[in-house]
Picture 1 (cartoon, helix red, strand yellow):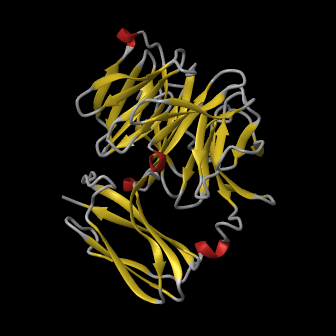
Picture 2 (tube, rainbow, N blue to C red):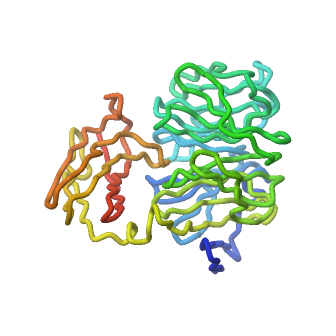
Picture 3 (cartoon, rainbow, N blue to C red):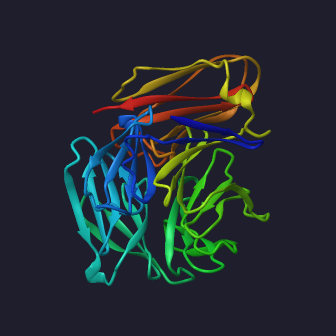
Length: 369
């Protein structure tokens, strides 16, 4: 069932379900952590939304969902772009349709890129235009968030909460990678590239960027500052969007014409060494699940800088609980379910991440009403 290929720089696992492959020109794979599964949109067929469990088994979550491109999760709903300038939303619990928002009256023929931001809004790109839209799923309100200023055929998106911005790929010859400030919609160029037809962008724990595209020969890797020439990191045809899985330190990809998907495990570097993923640091919290506050306990074995962070299920930074030098011994910190702006976040599963020179640990915690 599994094909494992070991290379000098990465491990690639392709999961193919011989008698049960439901993927038809798959586009975006997204992590639904609360239900321990991946969900995949499909350009072919009826835009089926396919679920993949932790054993690689596939099943229909929503048949004929119309979700042909990018996906984003907000609270208990998955949103996806559909034909005719529409965004559809389905309940992650029941699979029932809860939103069908049509932007065709605004002259939108196709939306492609989609990403959720901390405000609970989603950002969408106009594939054959020069506009980026912001949508409030709760009220169904939408507006043009950014327009022009170099935005031309915008496509894949990456949300960077630590910089309060989104990065935008452009599906055109020699496209720049653009950044859009989420406060004032300022547009500026992060990098100029020769990657014609860029579709999607992801970022790993070391802040390296990965860009893929239908017309590209594989996935290109950029350093954190886009200061060096990109490396052709992984070769294959018709990869649309990469998705970073922080729990596995891997990239999830779909293989459009192969009707398949794969997970590329990133080899830890000198910055994030293998020991960080085999740490003997014990990270615990109580209570879990919690309502008002949970207390995180950990022990360190020499003086070191500690960074304790909270991430949502999509890999977005929610809050930094600690970033300071600590001496040997037992330590603790608490989280009250609020983000860095002091606002309570939605109920659900989050992840505590502790980083030091002794190791890196992730622990799921559950916030309830």
